[in-house]
Each structure stands twice: as structure tokens, then as C-alpha cells.
Image (tube, rainbow, N blue to C red; front, side):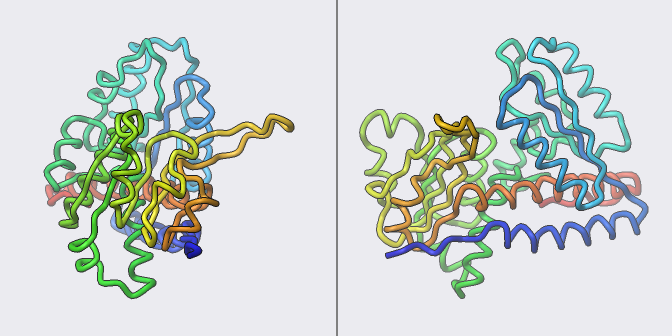
Length: 309
């Protein structure tokens, strides 16, 4: 078997067209949207992601404020920045990029975000709404995983409801930004779902779990973790990993996934590549959440009902 490669860039292009129309409609209704991204330190992945978001925002005509702070920035200074963004009417969505330096308490930072501008649902209020199945915003990466899967199911003529009701989804990784939200979204689709983390690998049980999966979502942050022996024949594998890898000879840095693509492609029915799989959709979805936040601000000003994703 040779896996079908799911083209995330093609799916992202279609989503971008939809978001562009949403931006136009928001402005026609008297609303506005803007996004602020905040990086503290010099983490390569966070810096690259910030640049990508700026590029997509520019293409969609959404104002984007890119803030960068040194790794010695104090927590108080960062919290002051967040408070200023919370009160800025030109900013509808705020993204705090991870990782944060060790001396900064991530929980305190996320609590300071306005829930109405917390477009990745890291504030406790938004995380709770997501867990209850009534999200204000669906975190962009987890949302994109299922948007890609739904798009692929539609393309191959599979009935979504029937597919989710009869198949097992296994999520590798339990981060607050991807793993846990992905489990919640699988629950929303009434799928059977299992969540595993690093202990499965350390205990030699990783393959025992992953080989049972009809759909394998891998968000562990470990390059090449999933190989052919970890995948059931005919499974659908969605690789969320974005790991910088430096070529020892040239020094060039490229992004690699959590899945050994060449190996797994010999067993999977369908597989997302890195780059070009989940990532391009994630970028657009984040902007979609910023537009939704702008829409909700218009509704709140008119005492209307807020939209939920």
C-alpha cells in the first residue's frame, strides 16, 4: 500500500478564500479585526510561526502586530503588554507563542488574556467551554486536524457521521494546545477516542496503542517517533509535529514531523506531510478565529448573541 498524500496547502487555499469573504462581510457590517502575536525569547519554531502568521494576515488584509521580547523580559512587563492589547480596540485576537522562558508563569500569562481575544482558548474560561463542547474559539491546530480530515472524507465520498461513529481515533500527545483539544473535538463527533502520552513509549507500549487506531493523530513533538511498525495497515495518519532539524553538513534548518513519512507511507491509507499538511491550515484557522473575535465584538456592542465555533 502507498498512502495518499493529503495536500494541506490545497485545503488551506480553499479555507483562505472563505476567511477572506468573512473579513469583507465583517467590515461591511461595520466591524474590524486585527491580530497581535507575542514572542518572548528566541525560540526558532515560535519565530518562524510568527512570520507565517504575519504573511497570511497580510494576504487577507488583516492588520497584524508582531511583538518580540528578549528572553530576560520580566513577567510584569509581559503582563502589562497583554493588558494593553486587551484594551486596544484595533486588536481582536491575541496569540502568545510558546515556549515562554522558565521564569515566566504560563498560567498567570494566560489568565491575563481577555477571554474575548484569546483565540487559542488558553484562558481557563475558554478551555472550560471547549471541554464542555461549547467553545468560544477552537484552538487552531486541533481545529485544522479535523478540518483536514473532514475535507479528505468529503473528497473520497465517506459519510462523516458514519466514519466517526465506527472508527477509533488515537491521539499521541496530551498538550493543552493540541492533544487535549483534539480529544474534545473527537468527542464532539461521537468518535471512540484514546489519548496516550510519553509513558506509552517509555513503557514499550506505544505500538500496542497506535496499531489499534483507524485514525492516528500525532502531536508528540518528537521527530520521527511514529514508524511503520506503529501503524495499522490502512490507517489515516495526521502528523501535527513541527520540529526544526539542522543539516549537519550545510547547517540549513528544515521542519520535520513526528511521523517517519517514508516508512508510514507504505502502510497508511492517507497521510499528511510535513511541511505542507496540517500547518498551512492552522495558519489560516488562527486568522479565522481573529475574524470571529471581531464578529463577536460587533455582536456584543449591539447586545447580540455571540457566535460559537
